[in-house]
Structures are given as structure tokens and as C-alpha cells.
Length: 130
Image (tube, rainbow, N blue to C red; front, side, top):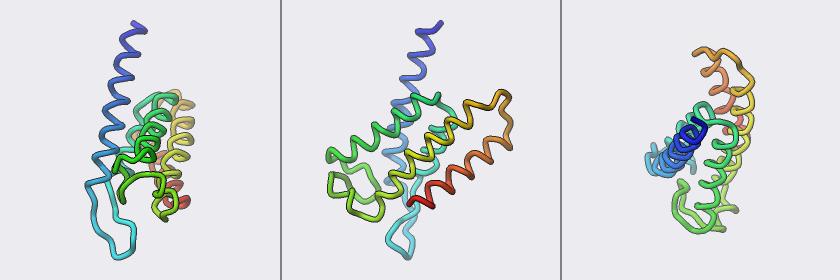
């Protein structure tokens, strides 16, 4: 049974990493420099639905793939992306995922309002750091 859980977790991790990558291309242009993307939604889902270690690894994989040159961030990719204002959101994704995953793992009985509260906390963290 434990092996089955590992396979399911690895499959979901790959799926969520792919969804975050695809979510960066689904954008709503805004008057300022940073567009609204679906990345944030998929990062929140990753933190809420995956175990702690798996959700952290998904976000780290996304960041590493973007920094090695794949254009999966909302404004491109590569090491030069670190110097853009949008990179604060990428760091916010990692920190929000860590905090959200810790809180969700601490909850014994999860209810809808708890998921909503943790999601609002995660969005706040992402936008404060971004």
C-alpha cells in the first residue's frame, strides 16, 4: 500500500508541476508590468493537496526548470529572470507553499473554511513578497 501512495504522489507532483508551467501562459494583461496568471491558483492547489515534501519539491522543480533556461515563468526564463521584478512572486510561491503545507498538515479534520483561510493566507504571502 505504501508503494501505491508513492506512485500516486509522484504522479500528482509531475501533474502539478506541469499545471504551474502551463498556468504561466494563461494570463490576463494588467496596466502595470505584472500580468495576472493562473500560476498562483495552481501553486495554492499544490500546497493544499500534496504532502509537505512533495509540494516543496514541485515548486523547487518549477523554479530550477525556469532558471536553467526553459521559458516557463510568466516573463520568460533563465538566470537573468532573477533580476526582474516578477521574480519576487516566484520566491513568494516557495515561501507560501512551505507555510501553507505546514498549516494544512497540522490540521486533523479539514473543513472547507480552513482550506479557504489557508488559501487567503497563501495569496497574501505571495503578493506581499512579490
